[in-house]
Length: 123
Figure 1 (tube, rainbow, N blue to C red):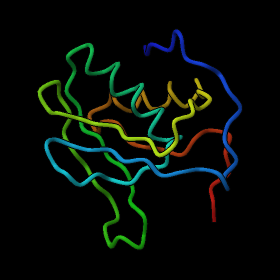
Figure 2: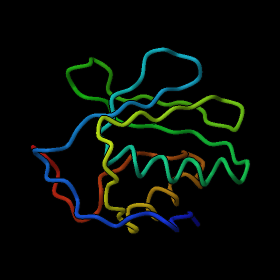
Figure 3: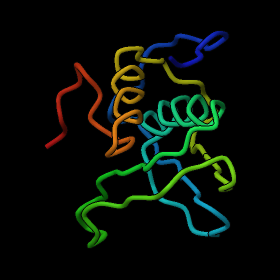
């Protein structure tokens, strides 16, 4: 399970107002661009897994214009991570999405950044 006590539940941001944060892996000065909403959910799941001293893979699909289609990294408690958000505002938490992400983290394939349930994919 994941820990969500104390999180504020706010209205989700409109697609037009979404901002890009960054996920920094190891000691790299270069982060991976990830939408703030996705990043906030990932942070909750990753912290919960690492708090239990679990190691796991994490994969996500990159933007098509980057030339890279999918990135995967190995996460464990000894790897420095940093989550940098473009917006300082707390975002609404979708508990169904947290469950979905947590379940994927507990599979041999590892955590996969899937689409948020109930949100149509952008075209």
